[in-house]
Length: 351
View 1 (tube, helix red, strand yellow):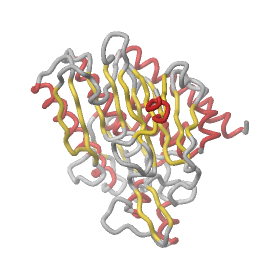
View 2 (tube, one colour; view 1 turned 30 degrees about the vertical axis):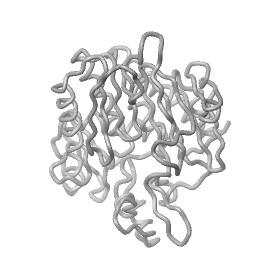
View 3 (cartoon, rainbow, N blue to C red; view 1 turned 135 degrees about the vertical axis):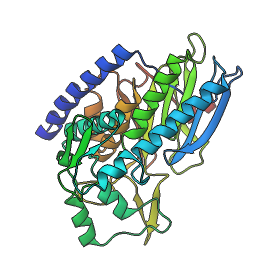
View 4 (tube, rainbow, N blue to C red; view 1 turned 45 degrees about the horizontal axis):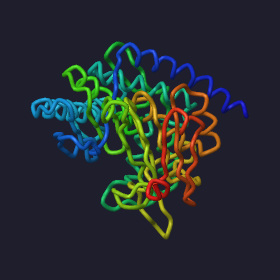
């Protein structure tokens, strides 16, 4: 194992130790999907640039459902890179001057810096100039000119972020923060904490790839969360995870991409090259205790590739991963089917 991986493993161990301690202190669970036979209430709204579905099973109170969506919308506005009223937009367009922001904004930025630091900059929340340049989710995305890619790469460094109290500034005024790799996990954990405070013990929160399940489907019966078959329909799963009080986060190249001259360019950008990541992966799914654990780790693992990511995940407590390769192979870490049950769709149909 080379020095780079060993260093990253040591740093992630320390980082996850802090997150695990926080999880124990706050006693926060999670959320899932419509697989309960008992009645429930549910709603879906387009927030965080994706479809967000929240389902309540044991406390079917429409007022609580409305409140949790309002909370999600609040964070959506706070962390957006494009909404001119958001904290992130104000930081990015302040010309390097300090901007006073919400404590929540400081918290999620600090969390993102943590992952950026632990990954040695492989995952970096200041990739915003590059993501804006590629505009992969725009109406007419194209491969940008090489000189503009190189210019955008020069703005990327989490070390450019300066935090003093509730004020945030950027050393390089051209640097742009993009919380796309950490915001949904942070928000999902906030939503589950809100639901628990309201007395909800059984619920599913699905923020477009970030799934958190509160409690279990029934006593001694876990929730079943599908792992999507890459480049297939929304309801086509490659396998099923059986989980209780867990977060399931998937990062993949099969939903946000464009094709130019027969080549696929996905939204996961590699700050080392300035281009979308190129390896043998279609998706990475991380199972962990908190969604903010899984969010940045999923993107980091995708950039690392299967072998290096597997070595990293297997050193982290209570974290498991499922990798789907471009040739259709399912590769899992050692904790799968020890701590967490996973059944491939082919086997589930046979049974």
